[in-house]
Length: 597
Image 1 (cartoon, one colour):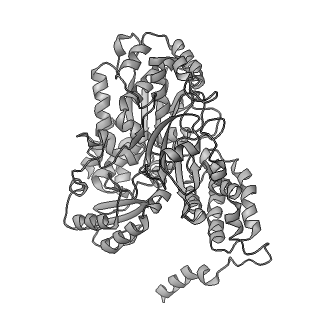
Image 2 (spheres, helix red, strand yellow):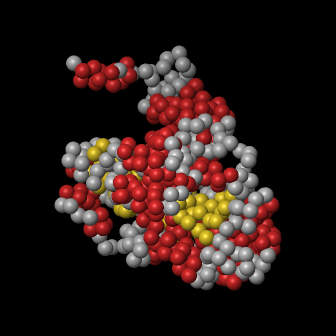
């Protein structure tokens, strides 16, 4: 055990900023992070044990107790539930002999819930010992448990039927499918590896920034900040050490585009990072990848090594004096809030992923307090294409204020879920027709933090000037109970994923779940519903996007589907409140005292 800890720490050169990776690698080998293990890490890295403890306690995938020889994390997202997740979970529990959130008595199988794992187009999905299992059914769950009891390896459980594209690569061998349904002119067009860097070295850093600014490319992660402006500020920031981060921590339920881009076009992403480094004067790049995509690790590391051998990374890149840039991969450990750039940076430093106060912004003081550019996977791909084809070509795509294309992840009640690269300006109706959706009740645009719209708004277009989105469209059919099946699920997601740092988010995300349950049970009042509008204003005081948008699933459905709330309201005011259930309230106490007796 001690050798494992020492060997992993040596693997990362004793770098305390790699604490997340050190913890995850040790856990992968030992099964969990015991108090003794944490103590040994503390001594080896010479950092307080409490610092490690607070990091371990923050992330979903770290465990301080054994979680079974086979650890099953079954997705709880809306899309998983749509596709029969509850029946799959029931089968797992019956055959494993334990409930979710626990380990079987023999220590063989651990069953745990987890939020969206980026497989919304092939649900229900689960992670079993860091391998992805998609399109699960009750029958498949039976086969998996039988295999576990027979002592099969995870590779044997997975089988040899691999997914499309690079998912069948010998270094991946995953059953995941990329499901690219429509290729556009930017991200998924034909591409000659190295062409972006070769064009970049013929230009000055200022020329590249001006080209990016003239293309009007904006961040594709959701916020839409002008990329060229971000690079310009970082270049002008004082200091010789600067960093480029690629944010691949897509945790928004319904979003899986970055997973597909990194699987099929990783070189395009890495070239974008190198070009950004050249433009702002950074020599260090970090791909921050969500833990759920750990199965891509060997493949991506191999691509990086190939690029170093081809002189597309490293020193004196492509023969350009002073162009030195390298990339390393760091992993998250299960925390949606780390999609926010300052929380991501905190996590990359080995800390809890809590958003920072701003200003200063990361471009001024980011990773290790140095100027840092954080760009989305798709944004970096767009920059390479602009270098190759020019800003005039790019500006012909899209709308007046939204240039280029958008890669969208479509899932839910449609015949053709998957990845679509479209020009900005497509209407929701266009997309519904393209994915062959019918009898659509609602569309969740931009994931839970976005807007839930009804048929009267399906003529709206995807663009920064109308319906902006980071990439997720969840289609909700008429047969769904919108409040129970969707809104409540999203509300629970935000409650669970809140880092708890800001009081409004910590308090109101939990209270919102309780009130939504009361509404669904028909035990709420009009005042309960009206409270959400007031709370939304308070939530704007939170530091990050998670807290600021956590009530969006509720407030956008109150606005766009008011009749669904009215039909469930039984009491017009608070003079009669049927919400209190005495027996339910004292159930835990009764159970505890009966055990004592």
